[in-house]
Length: 316
Image (cartoon, rainbow, N blue to C red; front, side, top):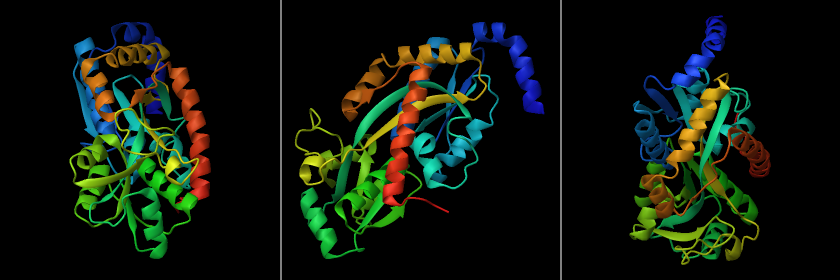
């Protein structure tokens, strides 16, 4: 009832609210913890929006439960443009196929604002594992089924490993983590064997020699990282995995405010910090209109259903 009253009041105040927006600080809830790729992009975009508007932007990390905690919190926030949700395919395309019930609806609970980053993963193993190529890892796993473990701190990381497991016919033990940096830490400590990781947290330890990179999950080799073959060309034809980030508002947020936020994001992706982030992490942007993000999410939801069904990732 309170939300209905709020929405009615918001409709009457719409012309003034949209014109004056933002007139106070904005909070962006992120689905994963500090130091993750999601957090890094959110902070760069948030800082630029703050610079453009003169209003502070606060990043609030709510990691856990594959992003469900953050998604639920953002879904019930007032739809006035002052609480936003920065997330990934995990909450918006994967979770509805993995879990029987969610406290939010990936489509009905949110108003798409803009897509941000799109990037491949690095397949990395601990240095003392006797496997220097994807084929050697597959052979090692087949020689000791169920003995090697993969870590994952988000849905795309788990999805990459599960799809790899299914497509190669190997038996791996999955070890879930609250965030990807924790999984990377355990890999470096020798407690798990392999990770499919976004470049933000996975590439640095590979490039400085603390872990061994076996391949990348893109369809083609990545310029600047030509030393890493793709998983597809390493004996698993057709394998491909991407991770993405995007910005949403609670459902019911007025269209003029959504459009203004979209314009702010379009300007933010031209900033030097954002462009440097893409360069360092060998990623791209897929920023378009809110409608573009909605269509992209729909296609990703279909893709992830196929992956979840094929890999048997469903949870109680």
